[in-house]
Amino acid sequence: MFIKRLVVGELGANCYLLAGYEGKEAVIIDPGGDAELILETIKKHNLKPVYIINTHGHVDHTLANSSLAKATSAKILIHREDAKMLSDPEANLSGWFNQEITSSADELLEDGQIIGLSDLKIEVLHTPGHTRGGICLKVKDKIFTGDTLFASGIGRSDLPGGDYKTLLNSIHQRLLTLPDETIIYPGHRESSTIGQERKENPFL
Image 1: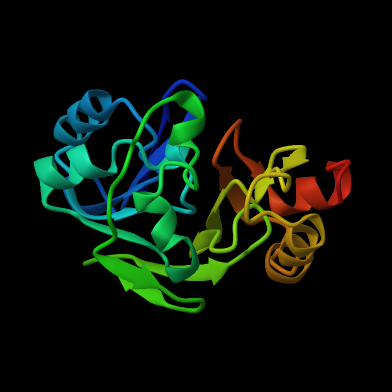
Image 2: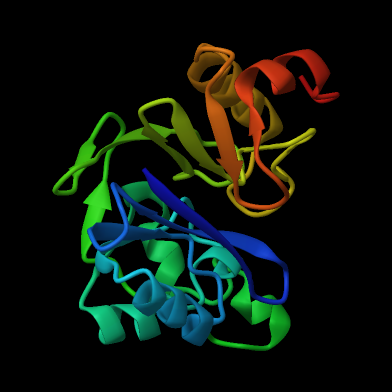
């Protein structure tokens, strides 16, 4: 499996390029800025983007949606509960920074949905709490957790659409039920494992 992490945007979000192998169909997860860097990396590894998947609707995970969709013809996917955030600067928080960053979804995701590439299957897990439509993306023994679960941390729940109890419930019922060896690739910070977070995460 090919996974490339790029730290992008002013808030240092993790954008991931995911494919079965170099030179294959790929997904772009959370392109929160630096579209040129993302495109250069795609070209370097001869990837063929099919989907742009947002784990949630905040601008630090979606800023480069439109420019990448135009450059690659990849479809933008997001959970149906967060779809309206893409076109609302106040909801996606770009308005908080005196900007109006908008995009639109091509397809809306649901819990349990399988996103298929030529050689990968990606399972959508709805994990609300940071936002109403927050999702994690499970691929074999790896999971991309967006702003739901970090290494030694959890996502904020004090922003519009957030709820602390809902977030903890999502983590305990959807993520901590996974095997300890499951690798997590979060929306910020370094990677970890479910086992490590189960034992050491102070919020859990």
